[in-house]
Length: 348
Image (cartoon, rainbow, N blue to C red; front, side):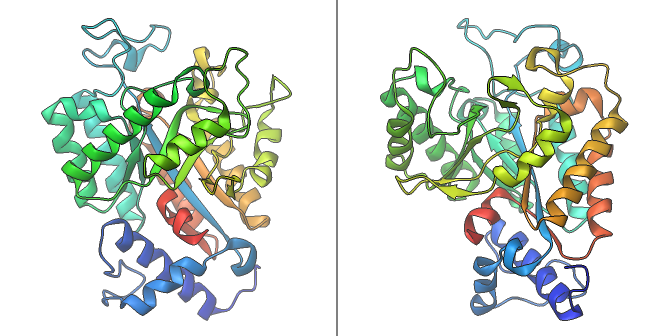
């Protein structure tokens, strides 16, 4: 792996460039020493990438955008419960200017490293014109934007299949209408230790298998729902969560739905006390943890998908230092592809 030829590195560089263009709905090259337009034949390379066969690894930063609306309280103090909307429900989905600008800055950082980010947004974010404008800009810049249900619907096992289908299809239509991009991927709110194989809730309304089929019936082809935060009902250690990257690789359910799991701790699970994290951990520990995850994925030729929440990372790292550090770290290793979750779907 460490002695891959120059031609191999050029191939991965080109593959990464095609991925960036495909996410933007174009096949234009991005960097790698060329602005050459890629042909449809060249684009087929993206479907053949597999770190187990090709060496190296892929690294994805995906963002679950589920913020409360109004004010800045939650953004700076994670001890404050979710703010409530006018109807009394959790007001997930709406942003404020701080986080809108933070998301734009993260996108700029990615672009500086010739990479694209993956975002999962809720349908109710389209209720505010400022949010619509934000996501139109992010989509036009070539970043991937997919479905996170309409109102952060969770836990799925305690919702009816009718509710699930309505929330997913409503958000899918909004994404496709406003952002001019096809939506075939969903990040489930919360995430589940067993993904959609089996729910842990004792009073489930819908079975995991019913949820799989409902998602497929909604026009979705891939889902990201499986987490790495616990094992046997107990929170795992940092070291074990990194080892579990090998167990959190993409796979198909019997239904034909593709699962692309979360890898390692999410930022909320690392920093936020109400998600089991320790708010006293310094930022440098988070960056070191991410570097160890990259090393493990690289040494074992794995996909690494990192899940981040702008509300959490903004509080602990308002300048987005972690993204610059990790992208820079990846660039020092040969054959690491910086990609989106959509790219992983295309490859698998």
